[in-house]
Image (cartoon, rainbow, N blue to C red; front, side, top):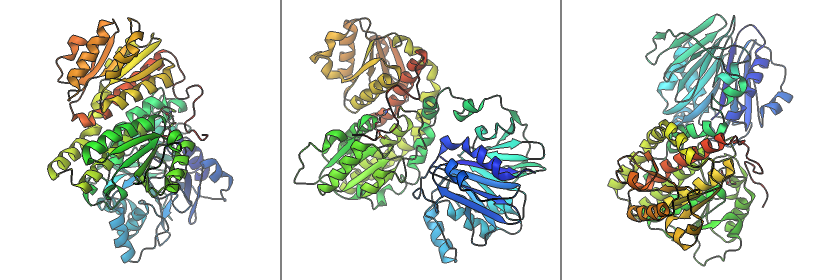
Length: 596
Ligand code: M6R
């Protein structure tokens, strides 16, 4: 996720472009840049936050321009990889939010035709394609360019000598702001609220030409579109959160897109990947902390089920105390931030032991990425809420892909099961959306938790880690004591704590664990504990044993953690909200834990 701003008017553009960009910093903050069209095209960019860019900004005069704040997904955070990018003739500057999937092939072709690249990014191909397509009309050139790319984008372009900003979008947000004698474009309305509250939402596949005189919108076929402006009544604070009360909720709602982005490009060439995941290791060890450790636990089930590769787990803070083995496992380190001190120490220790290391992280250029042999980037975008939500879901995606890749390499996944797993993963954003659409039922279910002192979460097999994660989410943001338990373990101790005031949340998917789960739920109900069960939409038995049932779309049980987790995240969120807790910044916790 990155932030884009464009301005065309009669005021000096630079101040507006920087001020508006700062409102988008929550979308990305590893580098930033600006292009202003005055007598000539001037571009300035740097690594780091916008304030740093602003401090060193040269004088840039002109009334038209674009700016960008980056969250790296392709190419590390650096000055070279910061946007805007300029073509070889120096006429065009371009900023982009999204992922160009076929950039490698396009780059090869462009280089063969003499284009010189200055960055490692996927984006840069766009500006070179634009240069080739330009025949006197920037809008036509951009439309032509976008026909050649596979992927997702919100893009804005300026051309030296022109007072227009040309923009387009596909699966990334873009909004046009309407002023008097000046107009704007931005990734979202947050950027525009200081200047206007009249906006035109640009729809998927549409493009726009913005000038001081007005705005023209075009549909995919190039037909001009008329649309009534919308009036925004949000404050800046509301808008940063996209109208959601908290970043956590916004980030949960971003999960369908985060899954989609993380899968982009990986599902299709999963079988011919040449990465570590395709190599044969006799065993795997996954190392992580907190929520990432729970994702790792799901990963163990997935890797063992799909590739028959023995997989062990270690908390990162404990890894150094574990004995090394003669046979070296592939060590997978999972960390959304890539900066967790315990995980970094484990990565170093793994390499010291001679193991190959593979990181799964959400932050391009984070320290972890420099400590390992290979990196898989989840593409969840920046996560502001302390509680891991969309990063957790995308870690699961990364681990499914790793398990599939290992299964292909070891011959444990045949073409039919590969086909059906691919199709299930592709449907996951849709299924998560269905869970989100059921938010009112989840919110109502918090009646069962909000006054509790203790809550138990139970599950079996692959949903044992899922309930550990559900319990962690609840305790972290609502301050209710919560414990996740393997359902079979209840009778070995915790059952003594159950009574009518201690609710139990049970993950009950119809798989080989189902009958035993029902028996555990009955045990719990016999102690008068209120039971909230989560099960498949077609389950007809749960109502008889549970006080309340939340239903999720029917998927193969191996993928059910993704959907149950979303329910548990929302349950924690709504419970904490009813208790009036500071959800995005829970007491005593930090987003990345950089001490051991
Ligand atoms: O950045 P990491 O994934 O390495 O962070 C690990 C934990 O600190 C983190 O998952 C923590 O447990 C979260 N607050 C959970 O929501």
